[in-house]
Image (tube, rainbow, N blue to C red; front, top):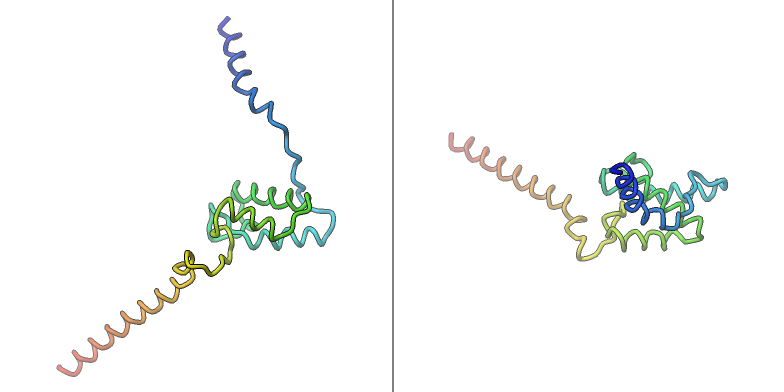
Length: 138
């Protein structure tokens, strides 16, 4: 009797997943070389949010695999690259783009390398000036 109850509970727990309409699987690769090149190019423009330093095209994370499948599925449905990018930006934000747009909310992202370089140059300049003053007074 306990086994029957456990089976019924497992069946009821899995029922919502079975009720969902299955999605068509995304093509692993397109037969058309131009479509495949377009998919790979678009995937290189998207950042893996798990790895962050790699594009979706190069990453081996499950997130990147899901995004690759989503990109290919939307391409198969006839969406343009811009429509696909807009969809992903709406879902994940500008950070998913390997080259986020220059906007007020991304200024720090774009300017941080220059700020770090300027701070390093300032530290080097102060250190050299102190060393020169010590050398002159000695």
